[in-house]
Image (cartoon, rainbow, N blue to C red; front, side, top):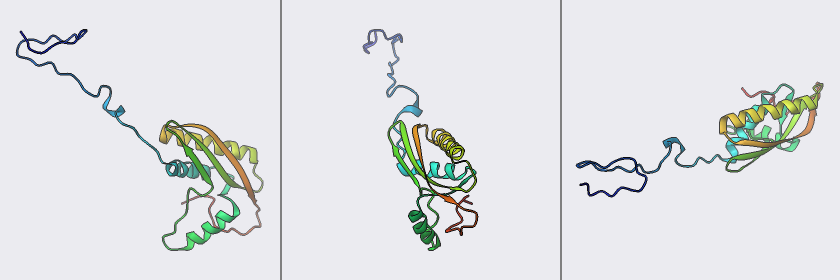
Length: 156
């Protein structure tokens, strides 16, 4: 007779000479543990996705773009892809605020719709978070004869 006690409902019979192994942790190994995603990660994804839309000239307010242009000229400063993007990230959802500059002549409503769609698709695909809202503020229009503070419409 086995000296291992069986639990009620246990379908594995403990036969003489064998031990009863109880699986610990349960479930798929990939689902054990927790993944957290920083606000900055979501902001980078959203910033790149927004800049990828035709009609978006730049991101951020005039002041942040001016400081950004100065920072970009400093060696090692680099472009800030999060400029003009603010994310609030929870455990399963995120909300985003974007500030954009559009090119003169484009439909602002269509551009905002395309930015919203592109950002939601990119963030949800890459992070698995549900994007509950993407608020877009259009802070300026880039006129054809205006000088560029920085050539930012598309990051290379």
